[in-house]
Image 1 (spheres, one colour):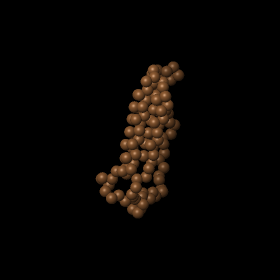
Image 2: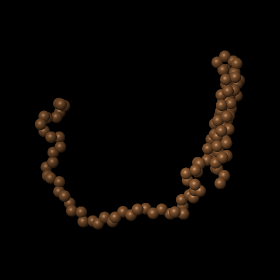
Image 3: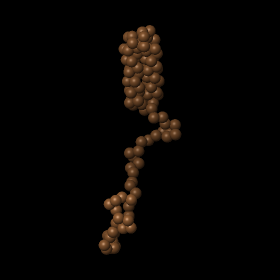
Image 4: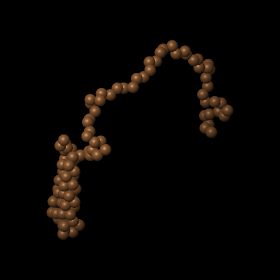
Length: 112
């Protein structure tokens, strides 16, 4: 037990009991918010709808291919520890190009 606390005394003391105040205000019942049905997007088939279009998926696959090609180019470098042109310059530029292509593949609007 701490030195500054005395044994046997409660830490919280109240001089007077709490007085209950009668609530005279009327509370209106909450109503459920209404939604406008015209603002909701119209889907042809919600179970089979894909988040991206065919062009998006094609660009994503191409981006993955470019990224893999960049790593393959980096592995072709014959210099010690990959410190040649292929390992330090060309391969990383190709990989970055693949990531930029992935970025555009995600942001491209699918054709309706």
